[in-house]
Amino acid sequence: MTTIDSGAAHPALKPLHAAGLDLRNRLAVAPMTRVSAAPDGTPTRQMAEYYAAFARGGFGLVITEGTYTDDRYSQGYFNQPGIVTDGHVAAWREVTERVHAAGARTVQQLMHAGALSQGNPYRPGTIGPSAVAPLREMMPEYGGSGPWPVPREMTAADIDEAVAGFVAAAGNSLRAGFDGVEVHAANGYLLDQFLTDYTNRRTDGYGGALLDRLRLTAEVVKAVRAGLGPDAVIGVRLSQGKVNDFTYRWPGGARDAEVIFGALAEAGASYLHIASEGRAWVESATLDGGATITALARRVTGLPVIANGGMHDPAQAAEVLEDGHADLLSLGHGALANPDLPRRLESGAALAEFDRRLLEPMATLDNAERHRRERAGAVS
Ligand SMILES: Cc1cc2nc3c(=O)[nH]c(=O)nc-3n(C[C@H](O)[C@H](O)[C@H](O)COP(=O)(O)O)c2cc1C
Image (cartoon, rainbow, N blue to C red; front, side, top):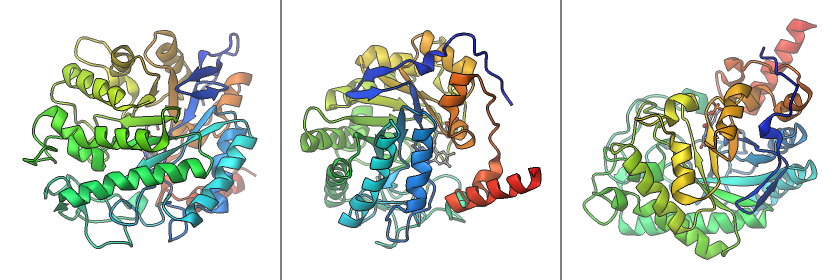
């Protein structure tokens, strides 16, 4: 249990108007895959309740779990939600209406899994920038086991299809009532596979030098911007670490970061969200020399930046905002343990510690509910 000093209002509770979003505070729910949609990718009532609870708990922004973008190769896990069919759009509308009714804004994370797909009923096999076996093994908490398959190298037609999928999905997100979209270019999924030297061995315009490896992400952002128009909110999530390589760092450090951030701002991003996969912000964001990657992103682009990684620690959260390292904070584990974390921060109530059994053996909402019931039973 962490107790919060309720003497002065925490800086994360200040409202923010940025990136075209009017937010009641600076606390966002980080995107979190929960593999709890219907087998055809339709979000369920249970998911609507799950998302609404964060809005009722006071979060200013709710970012959805990574949502697949096409009925080809984008899906990453069985029971992942999609934003492809009219049925998906109608069911997501219930989510957005309930989140809005509770006073929060909501952005949909758009995800193409590429080589890190462990469940896709639409197509056999996986695709990626190059036929390179991904590191490590599939993730049991999302229903996978054993080594990843070696992906097929994407053709020019596959690339066009992936870009078109992001554009169509983004249009569907806005039709479902989302306040914006976030392009998932982090954590080792398709766009990050193109950016990463060891998974991208291409010799065409999408491989080689840094800006060529970044080309696909920039094209996706430009195409989504062209599809949605100048006023739409289009965030981009980036990370150095990956779900299958936590300690990876961009080889050129701050120099690479400047090039990547600058190019994505130029492509039309509204905000940058720097993920901290598997580590705390302080470890993942500090560059050689002590500057932070999130402050660098703000300085290079002038865009609002979301910091992530252990932001449920009130002291760290305050420092990140007050010292100008970021504009907003996103919370994963802390939000799962405390869907009402902003309300607790307001009142000075203690925060619950995250219990990993919430996500074991699988990261589903059913499992979390069972775990909560068992705990309640043990206490009463
Ligand atoms: C169950 C779970 C699912 C996740 N799924 C996603 C996802 O779909 N997209 C994404 O960008 N990050 C995903 N993440 C990473 C989180 O967004 C976040 O970056 C990470 O948990 C670190 O933040 P934290 O220290 O606040 O938990 C997931 C994390 C968890 C715990």
